[in-house]
Length: 509
Ligand code: ZN
Image: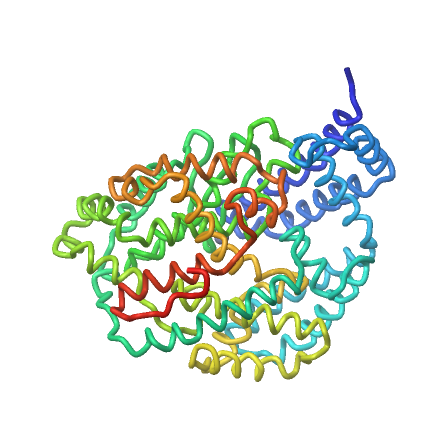
C-alpha cells in the first residue's frame, strides 16, 4: 500500500540524492581533482545545491510532509516514520523561512570572502577582511531574522547544527566549564613539560599511512564500505550507508598529526557506518548533530586513542613499524608525550585541556558580533585580550590570531564552533555511561579489543541516526541531562596523574 509516509520518503530521498551527489563532487574536489577543475566544479556544486533547495521548498514537498505528519500523528517520538516526518518537516520549514534572494546573496558574498581570506591570512591583513566580515555579520543577522521563533540572533544557526540547543544552554554550559579549565591550565603550566622529541623524528610517510589504516581497521572502520584518501584538511564524508569515506594527511617529521586525525575521522565514520541501514537515503541517515558527531570523533581520538590502556596494546604494534624511532620508548613516556598540555595560539593543534578555551573564545566573540555588542573593527583587540586572559598567549600577527580559522570567512557566523566543545563534554558523559553498563571496557581496550565499547555506542547512539535530538539522545543513553561533570572529572583525573598534581574533585564527582 502506498502511504503518505512512502510519498514523503520518496521526495526526501530525491533531495538527499542531490545533496549526496554534491558531496561526491566535493570529496573529489578535495582529494583528486586537478586545480584546473575548480571553476567548473564550483558551478556544478552550486547547481546541485540550488536544485536541492528548490525541491525542498516547493509547495508540493510541504504538502507531502504535512500529509505524512497527519498519518503518523500520535505515534511514539522514537518511531522511525514519525522521526522522519519530524526531521523532514523541520528541514523544509527552515529552508522555506529564508528567501532564495538572501540564500543567493550569502553564497555570492561568502565565496568572495573566502577568496579574499586565502590572501589576507598569509599577509596578516585583517583590514582587508574587515568589510567582508562586516557584511557577513549583517547578512548573518538578516538570515537569523528570517526565523520567527528565535530568541537570540545566534539561535537559528545553532539549531541548524545542534537541533534543540540554543545560546542560553550553550552559554551556561561554557561558563561553568571555563571556570574549571582556566585554573587547570595554569596549574599544569607550572609543572615540567614531558619529552616529546621522539614524536618528531623521521617517520616514513607510507609506513605512517599503513599504520593509520591498521589502527582504524582494529577500531572497527569497515573498508568494504569505505576508503581513505589524502587531502589537505582531513574530513569524513558519506554518500550512502555503504560508502562512508575518510581522508587524512601525513607529515614526515610528525607521527601524531596523521595518526590522531585519522582516528578522529574514523570516529565520525564509525557513527555513520553504524546507522540503521533502513534509513539509507533519508535525512535520518546522518549523525544527529555536530556536537554528537564530534563526541564520537573525540571519544575515539582522545578518550580511547590518547589513553594509557590503548598504547599498552598499540605501542608494540607501532614499534614493529618504527623500530628505530620507538624502540626504546616506554608506554609511560609515550603516553606522557602524546598528552602534553601547552597553551598555544592555534586551535587545531591544541591539547585536550586548552582546546575548549579556544572554542569558547570564538563562540563568545561571534555571539557578541551578532548582538552588536562588539564591532568588527574592535574584533582583533577583543581576540587578543581573551587569548591573554584565558591562555596567557598573544598572537604576533592576525595570521595566527583572528584570521586563523576559515569558519567566519566562508560561512554565516553564529553556529559554527559550539559543536566542538559540546562534543568533548558529551564524549566523557557517553564513555562514563558505557563503562557503567560494561565495566570490562577499559581493560578490554588494553588488550586491543574495542568491540565492547563499539557495541554500546552502536546500541545507544549510532544506530539511531537522527531519530533523537542531541539533548534527548544524551538523556536516553546516559540517564542524565547533558553535564560537564564527567568531562571535568576525566580531565582532572587524567592530567592530575600525568602531571602529578592534586585537583579538587568537581561538584557531583
Ligand atoms: Zn571532527
